[in-house]
Length: 468
Image (cartoon, rainbow, N blue to C red; front, side):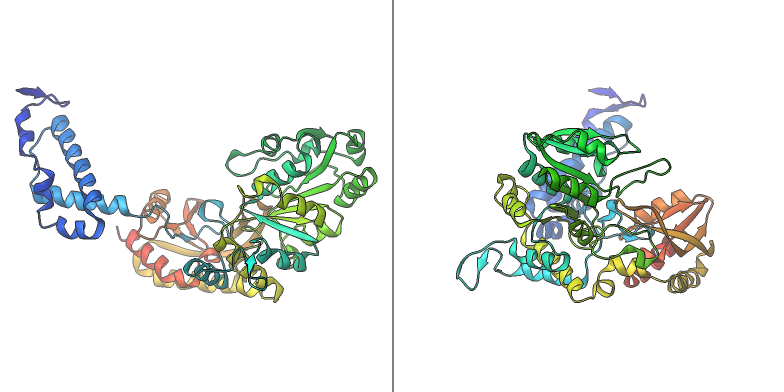
């Protein structure tokens, strides 16, 4: 029987009879070691895929069937590709400190060690050592959060969106929630505050205008029977400038007190330190929101706190106690490794060592002179690569939806190339990918977000790519 392939070449279908069987492939020199490492099942699956790919190629394009040893080598490569983890370390040379796509804030060494200890041994996660019986997992972070912020009570869930859903469900389900139109923000991944609020069973009541909202707008919509909550959402990932007005949190809490309605402040990023200390705009702290009278405050644990992914809910003991008993709390709870990392991060704040231990704050506080020295060291090490390189003035950003519009001056290595985007793609394809940015037709690498121990990896990676 003859067939015509897509190129119009007539060939014999019998050529496919030269394809070896899977059993024969497993006996070739390439595969016994692969079977020993990855297991028989995975290698057989890869062999089937490789043989099917060859079958299609021969039928579509013609040509001979490869030798069995060549096919076996292809099977081995396919197995390695299947078994390779898709989550892998990268070098972040973008200058974006809390890079949402690259894992957000890096954990401190203390937090890493705490996670390892929690993972490799049993722990008193939900065991009261003094009483010899069942305890609460939330105890491990609550006391520290209260001590650091002045909150009466606290609970931790798996992210700030979960904190928002739990708080709204527990405090305002079936009731109205007042929020300014200027605060109906969209967070990462296309999720919008109004959508999250609807899922909680609360009724959204928009007050004021997008750019100007007054305390009287809230009061005009306030009905003590139907209103369950006044919600303020901090503009953590955007700015409204120009003809604007917005009540202070203190004004909102005063209004809530007069009408007996709790006020919730969703800070988004959340911080325990004053960002103005580092030459940035002041970001409202969790302590300030509680001191202003907010009944409940929500924030992230993995942004400006510099800890693991978590959602923090802090506030009045009566409110937090109610949320701890809500049915959704189990769906949103965090695991032992997250609690271990969060506790270790909070201890750094308690001991006054946050700026020394937590990578986020070390990167924010990095001085331009030190960054200039590192960029210069890179340039000298790469002089043999042949590309034109200069150390230039540039700007880093905090990222992660935090401090929008704020920039930190930096010194970066600019590699001038005919096709910087193509080189950036090759850097991303390295065994340890290097993520850079292209700016003004140059490849830009910012040392602020490259860990010092990654310098050699970055230099070697650039050398290998630029030598092509």
